[in-house]
Length: 384
Image 1 (cartoon, rainbow, N blue to C red):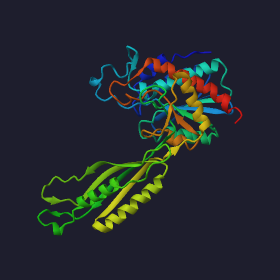
Image 2: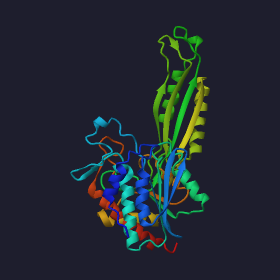
Image 3: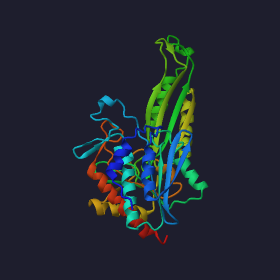
Image 4: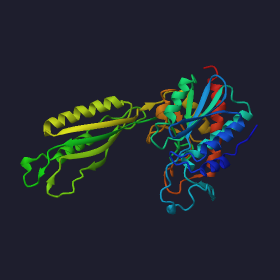
């Protein structure tokens, strides 16, 4: 049986500059490693995004590992102390874009799968669901791959996402849910006029400010099990008025709400419209609100699955990981509609940063954890 070196596979993946939406051969590298293990691979291309689904074994239980090979841009390369795509090892660390988020986790799981196959611990199905669109619009990646699985009548029993869940050290944290996210664009319309004759105009700026202050200062909730209180943050205000003596006709702003399971995207939108309607009646200025829900809040409650991961982490690190819902969104927001999902991967302290890097030793530890999860999974869920 083929053995996979997780460090060398990590380096091979990092050397592919797969900045969204480009793949640059990253999935070829992974597919080559998985084919060598006997996985059946399917390349799924949606629009300009390349994705990979690979599976070995038959029937239940079916454990799926999900992740992404695309990375964010490196930014100003001159600010890096190394070539971001050279996968250099300096001291005890591996440097490069995607090391933390999340090519090393993919390599670690592939190496763990190889070891599990060698010792015969896979007694059901094991699969990889890897997209090239997680860091982008997330339209032609995991979401459409899951629809393809549904159309092919392929069911997944549990999913482990290799996102960098640990803040400082391997073993810190398992992500067991995520907040929802809604992006909003608010425009207030008044009447343009000369600043010397304000009674002939209607300034939309004060009305916009009142709306933003009210929304941002009004508590949405007091939190939810394992979740912090929902939060509305104003991210941009745009007037676009270059004249100092003109009252503008329109004023606009953008804001984002990260919400816990107290809310749904629909109920948040209803709350916003109710509050804005009441404020509009007071100010007389009309408004327009456009919003897009990029993900619903969720909490995984399959304690057997979460307990398995936590047990394996504690066995290999000596630390019992915290169950957390902190951070932004991930593709787990799509997977949760198909199977219980949790996230555990590398230390994320340098993800998306200049000089992204991980400890070489952490790659080996993560591989050991994943191997224990795979072995324990089929023992624990075989009769399910």
